[in-house]
Amino acid sequence: MRSFRSALEGGHRAERNWVESVREAGRSVAHGKKLVVRVHNKNKDHVETPDALGLFSLEIKERSLTFTSPEDYPYDTVFVDDMRGLGRERLQHLAYIYISKPTGEWVWLTPLDRDKSWQEQTVYDRGRKHDVPTLVAPKKFLRPASQLTDLLYPHHYLDLVDGDAGLFLSGGGETEERERYVARTHPDIGGRGNTPPGQGH
Image (cartoon, rainbow, N blue to C red):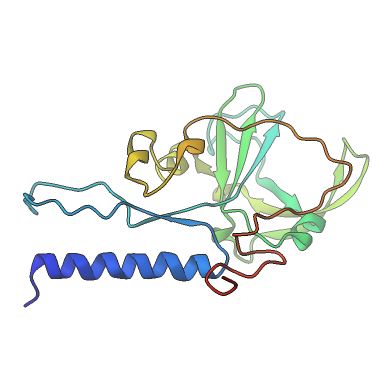
């Protein structure tokens, strides 16, 4: 039978290997700190450090509709996204967040729930004054805000991330103007047009 220390070291090794393999695939993940607690009661104590953390994309949409929860969302369907944009995106958003402009409350849905009931429809966009091919989901897929905030990593655990996590605490949100959009990537990060780290160095 393996000792607890041996099992812990094996688990840490598996966690490190997984993070590095995902990084080599050009995706953004971070290590959790690998803590070894010398005095630990497995029946009462719980170490909060994560095995790893992932960086996901969230799409935020403000609506002029009045709602406070999925239950009182005023329509039977939800406009998810413009199909033209979806067709060009290389990255899928983990969640679409819908903010009610009148109430400030928000709800969300995830494409992970998509099934045959999600339909592609032509919708007239009053702002742009033309028809837009749109992915539409039934209202039943909306989730309360609390279900997403429960998944987002808390500020008071950021010291358990193995590396700088300051931008998840404050900063950012500025607007940058460019003549045209050209995707930019850091030379050390795998992705569009770059060799993933570990293969090109």
